[in-house]
Image (cartoon, rainbow, N blue to C red; front, side, top):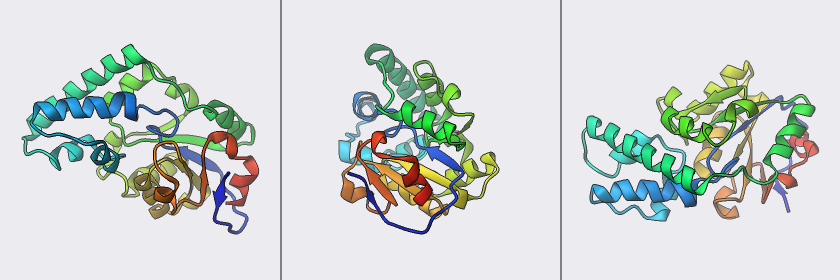
Amino acid sequence: MAETNEGDISMIKAVIFDMDGTIINTAIDHDFPTWREVFRSYGFNMSYEDFKKASGGKAHDIIKDRIDISDEEVEKFIQKRTQLLSESLKTKGVKLTPGFLKFLKALKKEGFKVALATGAIDSKISVIKEHVALDDYFPTIVTGSEVQIAKPHPQIYLKAAEKLGLSTEDCLAVEDASNGIESAKAAGMKCIALTLTHEKEELRDADLIVDSFDQISMEDIKKL
């Protein structure tokens, strides 16, 4: 069942989606194993809990916060991780979150603008686009390569609202992690959280908490 913090009727004009863990879930099958493998080659053992804490962060920061290497070596790390991710996606594939396309279609039918705001950098986005038609779904995309500070800082959502030509108060974010919720709320947006990768308690600051896209109605959005 959806859990909501009730408020006044709002005028949401756009819905901005996070990517990893929200519209696709590459975390367990692809992201964590490839991060862990490259970190291990540098003598660092990344746990799944540590990986979850890094969710939404910029790749450069995730690496530099854990191992002491040069910026040149960071680029080599990212290239290796991107290569492993590409191989993993080709081998195992990636699927859209159940209910996402139906929800997206309903939003567009109601006249809502839609956008994607992901902390993933352009090299990862290019790999994902080989398997998921992101450009067909989102006319507006903001990636981690376009911002200087990652979630939970609000910069990526501020940038998305700017690209949409809207104020942040007119935008609703859809997230799966506390860092993303904090980012959206700091930008002045309402936020819906899906319990796809994190426990409900970790998502408590969201305005609406659901277990799936099928639990979000257009009326829910209009009431946020």
